[in-house]
Length: 555
Ligand code: NA7
Image 1 (cartoon, rainbow, N blue to C red):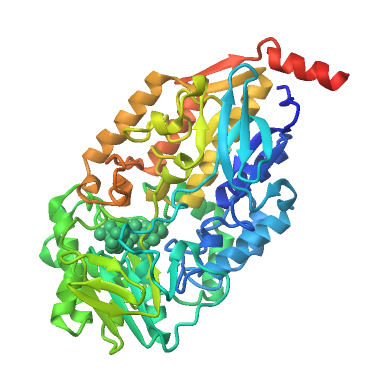
Image 2 (spheres, rainbow, N blue to C red):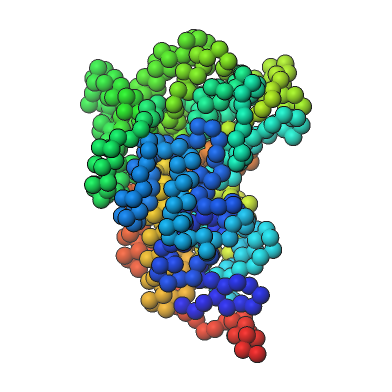
C-alpha cells in the first residue's frame, strides 16, 4: 500500500481522531502492525471521557476489574484497581499509565481539534484540516471520537447572563471547585447528575436539584476491592474476558432469569431484591426479558418505586423521584451512591421542572414557577449530543464532496456502525448502528479496533487500496438496527439513544440492541467472507495528483 504523498501536508497511512480509549488502542495496535499513524486530540492529554468529565462524584458504572484493556496480559496484571467502581481520577491515571507504557504521546497532537476531513477521490486520500490550520493527509481516517463527547447545554433563555460560576459536568475545570457555603443549582438528573448530587450536597450550603424527568437508579454499593477479589480476577482474566465476549451486554456478570413468566410473585421479588443487593446495572441480571416483556418491566418498575418510597422520607419528594414516564432501561439506567438518600438532607431540595420548566436564567440565578431563585453556582448535568454530535460538528465530506451532515440528515446510516457508504476508507469506532453505549464500551472498542486492523492488514497483503460499504449493505444493516430496536422498549423513551434530547435531531434509535455477542459474530462472519457488503478496490494506477507530487518532490 503506497504511503500518502502530497505536498504541503504531513502524510500518514492512518489518521485517528481522538485519544480516548479507542484512539489510544488504535494507535498502539496499528503502529505495531507497521502502519504510520497520527492521532489528533482536542483535549490537552489522553483519556477522552475521563479527561473531560472531572465533576465531583464522576465514576464508571462498569466494574473496574472489567473496565480496562484486555489486549495485553502484562498490562492487566500490573494495574491494580482500588474499588469495585473506579472513580474518574483513577481511570485517568490508568489512561496515563497506558500512554506512558506504550509511548503513545509521541504520535498524538494534543489541543488539536479537527475542523474538516475531506476525501480526495483522485488521490484516494483523506485530507484533514485542524483548527490550528494544520493540514494532514492519510489513506485511512478512523473516527475514535466517542459516543458522548459533545456536551449539550439546555436551550434556556438568558443562559449567558448568570454572574456566578457556571459549569457543564463534561467540561469541568481542572482546578477544584469549592462548594462550601455556596447555593448550588444542579440541572439534570441522568447518570451524571445522580453521581454529582450526593457529593455536592456534602459541601454546599444548599443544593437545589432541578429534575425534568425522574430516572431509574440502582445502588452501586461501591467498596474497596479486597486482595482476594483482585487475585481471583487476575488469575482468571482469560475466563472473564471470554465470558464478557459471550454476553449480550458485554458484562461478565450478566445473567438474568430467562423469563418472568416462570416465576411466581414471591420468586419475582426475590430475583429483584437479589439484583438490588448486587447493585449496579441491574437490568442485565434480573429478568432476561426486561426490555421485551411488559410484565417484567412493570415488576421492576414497581420494585424500584417501592425502594425509592422507603428511602426518601418526604412522601411528596419520593413520589416526584419515582420514574413514571418510561420503561426501566429505556433510558440509561443510573448507578448511584446515596442519590435518593441525599433528599433526606436539610440542605437539599428537589424542583420539578417537567411540569413547570425553568423560564430563564438571570444574573443572580433562575426564574421558575414565576419566582426568581438566587444561586452562586449553576451546574449543568444536561448530557450530550450523543453518538453523532461530534462527527457532525466537523466538516466530513466523502465521495463527490457529499457532506456527512447531508447524508445523515434523517438519522445516521452506517454499515455495522463501522463504515459509511460514500465515505471510503473512513471507519467509525463504536459508531451508530453498533452496540456501543449499550454494551461494555472498552470491549466494544477493542472489537472494532481489532476488526479494522485485520481489515487493513488484509488490504495491504492483497494490494487493495480502498474499502467502502456498499449502499445496499448499509441500507439493510440500518433497517436491521431499527427492526431489532422496535422489538424492545428502548424506542418508547425520549432518550439520547433516540436523539430526543437535542431539538431538531432526527428521532432514530442509534445503538444496536441485538446483543454485543451476536454483533461480534456477524462482524467476524463478514470479514471471513471477504468483507461481505464492502467494495474493496485494488491498487490502481497512480493518480494524477500523486504523479504530480512525486515529480515535484523529485525536483
Ligand atoms: P443524560 O443522561 O442525557 O441526562 C441529562 C439530564 O439533563 C436529564 O435528566 C435531562 O432530562 C436533563 N436535561 C437535559 N436538557 C434539559 C433541559 N433543557 N432542561 C432541563 N433538564 C434537561 O446525560 P448524563 O451526562 O447524565 O449521562 C450521559 C451518559 O454518560 C450516561 O448515560 C452514561 O452513559 C454516561 P430528561 O431526562 O431529558 O428530561
